[in-house]
Length: 120
Image (cartoon, rainbow, N blue to C red; front, side, top):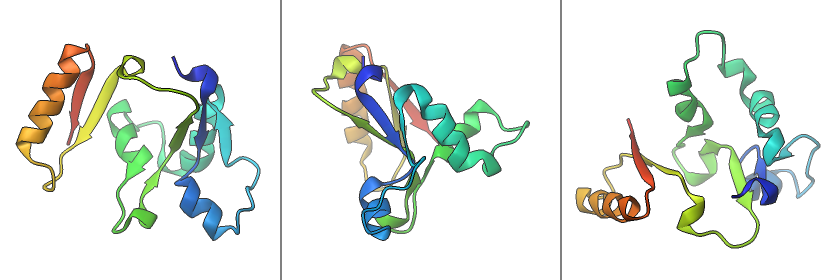
């Protein structure tokens, strides 16, 4: 549903470009089909033969002390997006979100056959 209109960026594009005076270095962005290459280029030193698939989310997304310190791979999707384009939503527990909000989200997602995965 999104492959033909999505690109990936190695970091928060706003922070990344601002730090580099809006000069985009080669290799910092990739098409959806080339996203694995971008991930490897960014994170190869953190992945080895004993890395399990369950560890990938915590390698791909790390909350910093501020939003500017967050580490992640950013996906840009051009054009409209509806819940029908979503297969799964990952929820990382946080004290700032109440249990009722999480339960409401889970119930709404179930109605449209979208899985809510609660990350540890």
